[in-house]
Amino acid sequence: MDARFTAEQDEIRRTLRELLVKRCGPEELRAAVLTPAGYDPALWEALAQQLGLPGLALPEAYGGVGCSVTELALACEESGRALAPSPLLATAVLAAPLILALGTGAQRSALLPCLASGELTAALAVPGTGLATALGLVGDNRGDWAGGGRAGGVQARRADGVWRLYGQAAQVLDGHSAGLLVVAAHTGGFARSRTLLFLVREGAEGLVRVRQTSLDETRPQARIELRDVDAELLGDDGSDVPGVLAAVGDTAAAVLATEAVGAADRALERTVEYVRQREQFGRAIGSFQAVKHRLADVYVGVQAARSAAYYAAWASGSGGEKVGGLALAQALEALRTAASEGIQLHGGIGFTWEHEAHLYFKRASGDELLFGPVHRLRAHAADAARLFENREVTV
Image (cartoon, rainbow, N blue to C red; front, top):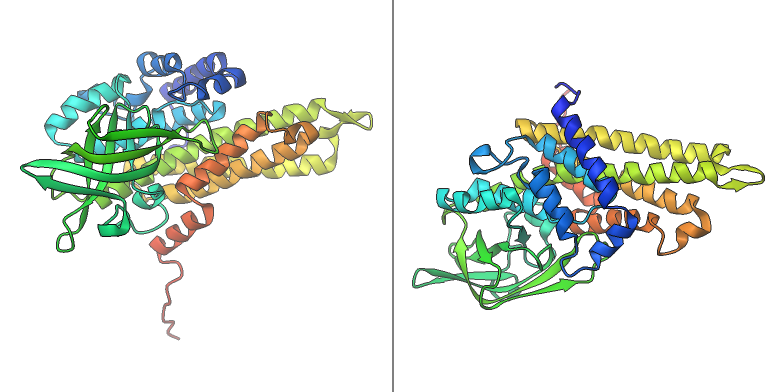
């Protein structure tokens, strides 16, 4: 593994950081999250049309750039630094890889170029609050998490050659504004119980979408209600949906880890800037040994998380070991620590709800609710590696 970045990768980071510094400052961010979409459409157009972010990891045959997961992860690291609200995660990290992996030739040709250009946004709708389970991050995803019988979830039935969906999904990232929904639904009854993915277009009859109030406003979420909605099966009836979801989940975890590292790094930077300026007893509080030690611990945690996230992104793109969940756990822990220390060291102003430090703390807490928590990410990784299996020892 060559740990150095290429000139192209460095250019992606530099260009994106310059754009976000100009167009996604704290004031612009707070204004964007209050819009109906939850993000700035003009900024999204710039990210998609000028920089091609949604298509970074998509093949050139489908209008993408043809880069690897690493380039997408580096782009998300910069968006994480700014906490930039956009459909990038929902579209390029969750939905597009599922369509690429499972879709028929016609579906890929029709949808992926639109997703790569940013003309179309997409969202993954999973029943209940089981996104982390569906992606195989906190447990086995081959159970009945998609619903079944009176257990709720989303049911799929086929009549006269047409698939119809009924049920509800909550905490759907960008689900209120996405032009395309990729819905996980249970079908087959008791005899052939299985989970399949379906495509539901914006404006479909019987589709109700309501934006939810969420802890982290930079990650807009929605409740999706499907009231006997016509749907198109993604791929074919025999697809290994849980396996594909788990593979996409590992890649998504690696990208999310890199994004969290970017946010943690920026939270640390802002705290260091503040302690250099804030004076107490006639000297900057950053000169106190106790403050230095606390920030040094945060720095070490961020750098360790960065190394883990970069390795996970490289491994995911090169067919290596699946360590996205572990990297995500370490990155979320680093972000939570950096944000918490930032609030503490900003003193009284840091405890005000309006201060920017709280945005980073909410991102850490919100991501744990969606994709974690940290202890479950690590427990599942340990179970998958069989670390704690009883082994007979012969002497």
